[in-house]
Length: 197
Length: 197
DNA sequence: TTTAAAAACGAGCATACGTTTTTATACTTG
DNA sequence: CAAGTATAAAAACGTATGCTCGTTTTTAAA
Image (cartoon, rainbow over all chains, first blue to last red; front, top):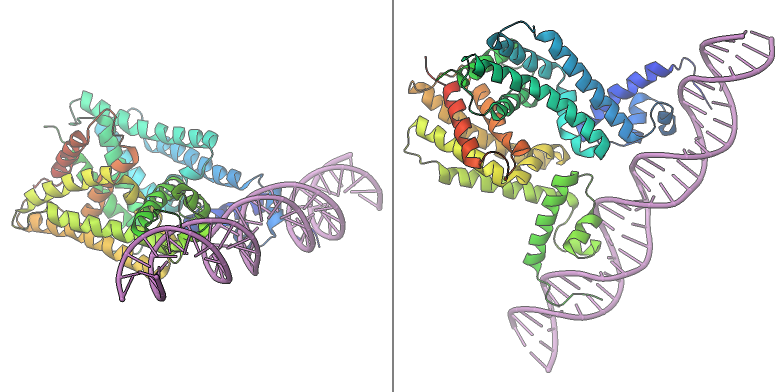
């Protein structure tokens, strides 16, 4: 046997990425085998290597694409001219809804960092830092404008991010609350948590 | 060779637990091999099975012990007679410091849930729920007493827990801030985030 | 002193892993 | 239509895995 009818490189690659995302999310990167992955895609193990060089590359590809999308989407969500309060409001709304929609990517981007070899680790963590810095900058600006009370901007940012990111561990699309309701409640909590003294 | 001089069951078990904790934290449960574990402890692979039945049992043992300690320590930290505000203050301080000290146990207790087989998963998640309910109860009591503004107590609790738990991902013992400073800042943020009115 | 339990060794089991190689077929381009 | 490239199958590679086994030695109770 050999090449199957209707096979098409880019389409297979997308199927691999989707199946990889699912398997890594469900079982973890180390626990997911390439045989499982191949079965999920519907090809043989060896054929995977027409689409990536190593298992590690598959993971890095997924994480890098996710971080690029995240950073890019954030830029679109924030209007540069706006004040700190409006920017914070936009940030919270964006972060919560994005993390609900892309919950699997977000999850593996935190949990599989340790599966990255050093060079790749540096790259991904660097991108995450860039994202965090956006929020830190907003907080510092709000403090400078006298809008927020922030003892340590980085600590506050980490706290806010952790709180918001947490939604993707418990939020259920058909649960008691809608994404909007959650975003609204968290927005209020964040703003009150930063209210000027 | 056979039984080595001075060998002692409980002592070996403790060494296995400590080494297991370290290896699981560093590499993940699936990625850690029993050969690594045995080497770290200083015995042969087969000898591990004098101390646990399966690799899964090792993980469950670690997680169960951690959750029992966590729940028990919380009970000690909270004075039942106190008001909601005082209880919340005690909860935040306890949670932050405990999570800084036991950061490895906390981390694997979140990240390795998926490595548990169904029966064990149910047990551990049940214990975590019990912990979460403690905070939810405090929030609801505070709301009933008119001390806190809480739209949805569970959502608020999850948010607070995620924010506080986040410390163990970035806190460094010799970093810019002490554990007390972090706890103090987060306490203020939590209280302001729940301020009445 | 005898005996049973505890604890470790060290070899080996079957299986699974990531990866490579070879070969055959399907598309694509000239 | 022919040549070349893309894509997949299939089989195999060496290594690592969790776990079992028979055996041996130490420890502690009878």
